[in-house]
Amino acid sequence: MPAELFALANAFLFALHNMLTKKGLRYSNPATAVVTSLGINTVFLWGVSLLFVPLESLTKAGIFIFVIAGLFQPGLTRFLTYKGIETLGIAITDPVRASTPLFSALFAILFLGERMTLPIFFATLLIIAGITLLSHRGGGSVQKIRLLYILYPLMASLIAGFSQVLRKFGLAAVPHPFLAAAVTASSSFAVSVLLLLASGGRKSNFNLNRECLPFYLAAGVTVSLGMASMYYALDLGKVTVVVPLSGTGPLFALALSAIFLRDVERVTLKIVMGACLIIGGGLLITIWK
Image (cartoon, rainbow, N blue to C red; front, side, top):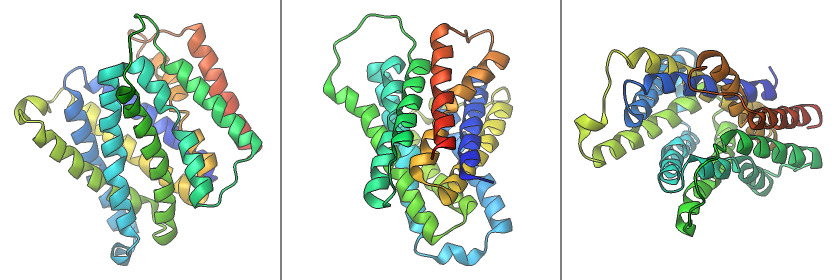
């Protein structure tokens, strides 16, 4: 299976995960969703790894690369993104976060010796432009923005871009995507639990109930497969190719929302234009990589 298909599978699975999580959030809260999702990731991915991955792989020094990667993403990047949403709003935070493929490409060129071709560069810009259009909600007045607030989503994108390169390094030493995803999920889960405990009010912050549990379980398994797909994509392909394709999730989210969330999502001309840009960028990377 080509790396590009794994990257697109990652985008689709993460979009499906977001839709399921959105349904579960009607009965719970984001802190519960994050901790529950990562907990399911840890159990599911370790279960698969212990069945199919040689146990001696755990003793390799390269495994610590995934531990470190998990501390940064999704743990730290998610925290910075939430801070951006809190201070700037989604309409500004999401487009800034869409710059992750450019950072990943830069780090891949610097540390992995990959080459940024003109078609890949142009396709990456198309995808970022499309994500920006899909992410921008519009409305509201323009407010004075502090530089510090812009740094929240910008640092999240930079760290996410570097994390993909770090994972590529790790896969060269431990070429087992499911095991890599399991270790990353474990360290991210530990970070999320510590942040939850540090925030105080544990009972009020963690609200797992019968209504949200089915959605969170399905979302957890879905995103586990999405994480593994990304590791397979990084193992088989170039960072400059697979990361932009994995960023096409908003396109799949648009399709899923139109089918399953008609009561809360509305298709507009801006959304259609954004989708076309993403499709064009994805096709350009796939054909002229």
